[in-house]
Amino acid sequence: MLIHYLSGSRADFGLMSACLHTINKSKRHNIQIVATGQHMLSKYGSTIDEIRAEKFEIAAEIPVNLSGASGAEMALALATELKGLIHCWEKNRPDMILLLGDRGEMLAGALAAVHLGIHIGHIHGGERSGTLDESFRHAISKLSHFHFPATIESAERLVRMGENSSHIYVIGAPGLVGITSLAGDCDRKTVASQFNLPEDRPIALVIYHPVVQEAEHSAEHIKAILEASTMNGLSQIILRPNSDAGGQAIDKLLDSIDSQPNVRVLAHLPRTDYCKTLAGVDLLIGNTSSGIIESGTFGTPFVNVGNRQNNRQRNLANTFDCSDVNVSAINAAIIHALHSSPEQKNVYGDGTADARLLAALDHISLQPEILLKCNAY
Image 1 (tube, rainbow, N blue to C red):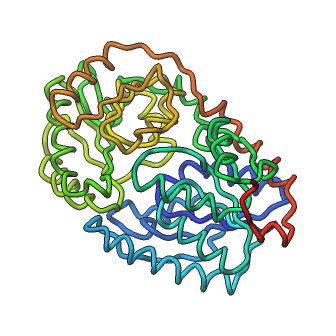
Image 2 (cartoon, one colour):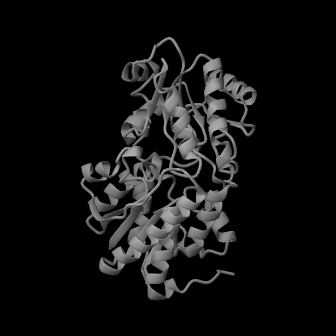
Image 3 (cartoon, helix red, strand yellow):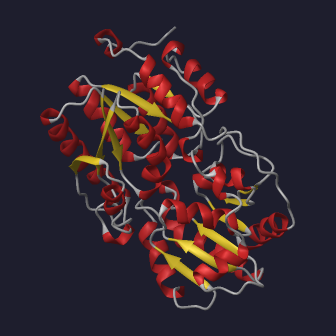
């Protein structure tokens, strides 16, 4: 089966890389990557180079303009992606498109594939967040023909949404594949040495992405996080935000603190380096899905700021929710997190999503009638 995986950023490719390698090695399926979104932009680390370095065949590169300036820019990028995907899949038609999560480029991929009569498999469907991302996620699920959710709870939600239960395969979170072995490889001392930070201060990994509906508050939100971190004497390793509306304002503020001692601002960390850093820091602060999913495997405390991950199924032992984005509330959550000792346990699975996804792909049959979707009840 020829499968195209659509990738728009460091985030989704890092999560899926191990699964895609497993599928390719089976010799029963051929994976090609369609790269778009942030991958070709130097601002986000030119991560197309990582796809090339991992020797994946690239079916197409669809460049877009993304600076994190506005919602209008995001919508125009989606339109560019839709046009590019249609052109790609008319010339090089795969048997299936694989999409992950809730990003705009994934919605563009679903719309293009539906119009071209190509089967769609959706990974991480059925999850809730309460932001614009949730609407995108459910829209992608309704356009998809096969579902690979991470948890039973998400699978049950897909059934309640009217999806055919015989086309739903619970696989766990792809982002957990291969990371368990990294848990013992890194500690604060290792991270401090790598980033030239003092060993005697706790280290926070900070990742805060803009929420589109709150784009105008993005700068004040990241400022509150950084002030609370400084109050607690934390060294900070900060990853720049994604390209959503409000990201430009966050970047501008990060530029102003980049030269401060005990602060490291990075555009990108390769996946293995990122996971080792996450395993070794004292806590993760922000609103990244990595805090909801991967951090539990390492037992790294996660201070979940704001509402971007509001309703996501979470690992309760290591997640410290802080819905009020102000210095006082974030400070209290950081103190709580620093005094915790969460166990290494994860509701998103045991790191075998690659084998389960491969088994599901081997099992499914791409019948034409499956393209004619209707609600299961």
